[in-house]
Length: 468
Image (cartoon, rainbow, N blue to C red; front, side, top):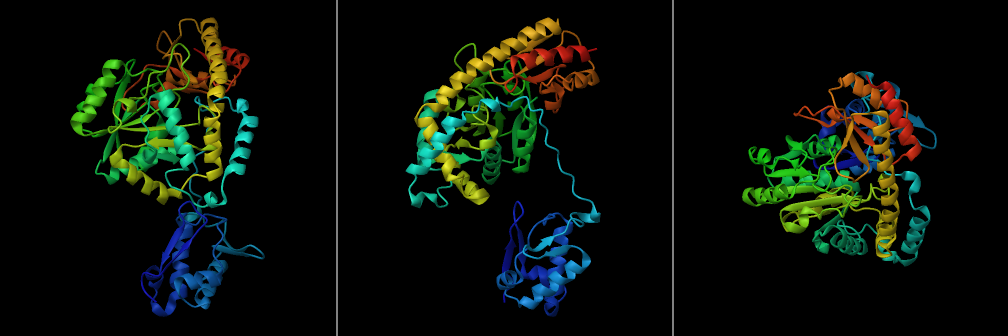
């Protein structure tokens, strides 16, 4: 028996690793007491949540290289104390009563359905996606049902390289593409990769995506807010910080709707070259531009300075959880390693189905259909604002799934909150909720992608009724 002997208990987000040294706190002769205490701490601290099934005593004993009696005694002690419960047919599971220190369950962040960036989920192309899945199932060799390449299935990476090059002017060699679990995982991997390469902090747009900022922080980066105006991120303010990384949404800034001005695009890439810095490009909804063709991705101008990320969350559905990174050469290997450590790879069938969807032009057809629908909904929003909120304006370019409504005169924050929660069925959030250091002008970020034109009319009318 060595101190390095360990066992991993699955069933949580990260698993619980028990080292033999951890369970010897009570002395080598009382391994059962040490094991019981290690499990007790894990339950109290939330690392073993209620409902987690523990390994069979024989299996855990074999992993820890101790006698089965050690595990049985530990389990029996914790059952007696109420930490565990022995279920016939289910084994030993963590009880409901000791899920956190002090017996109080840990706070759970509630799901917030009022996301203004959600697409029209009822328009998801189910029949075409089903055909793509069937094609994937029929064409996929048995050998490719294994764990797969952490970078993603080769067929999907080839399809993405062609699609992104054609639609977004992205330079995407196959060995630099990493398929991810949506953009959320892409941002997390980007943060971890930068930290591993000695970059401790990143500039973030202000106002900007709260979720992306939180994800970058969880990935180990400190975040510094950089102001955004009608021309996009303030590159001069960024240059004054001494940072060596920044996260931007240049094609359609979230939430303001601004497009990064040509002069600032040039200045941003010059800053990256001068500082040996990295630009994380979040290209979250660039496919939807209604007044003209969308601007090309920054990445095409500087593939070795821009870490490009995107997903199908806005074009198809967030629930599919498929995204991608196109990495500069110096980060490609690191991102592949981090992806493998995170979850090995994305589901193979879903990847090949998306590849089929891209190869057959199904995604292009769906985007064309939905762009016409979203453009009509945006026009309905403008009309409803003119009718019910005279003096208010809609800012940002004609693009995406949301818009910012700005009053002609200052409106108190509590009044904006009341308008956002008006019972009209629109997803609306005060602009101030996306701010960090700056104090933005009063406004409401309103989603129109997931609602009909009738609901847009009713929703704006309800907001007007709640206005001061």
